[in-house]
Length: 67
Image (cartoon, helix red, strand yellow):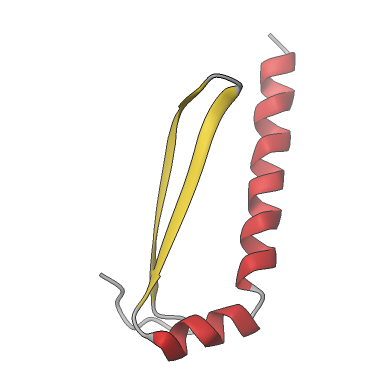
């Protein structure tokens, strides 16, 4: 459950699994309440997680290509 840390009360569950095209990446974020979610969205939550996902894919693909 989300605690109340600053600046956003949330918990993220990130899982990786097998996928026919490579690796499945799943992120589930739970906020303590609606106001925490709204605040997180205003801070750029969606764009930030999208950036992290793209960066992770770049690293994984570079490592896979170096084999």
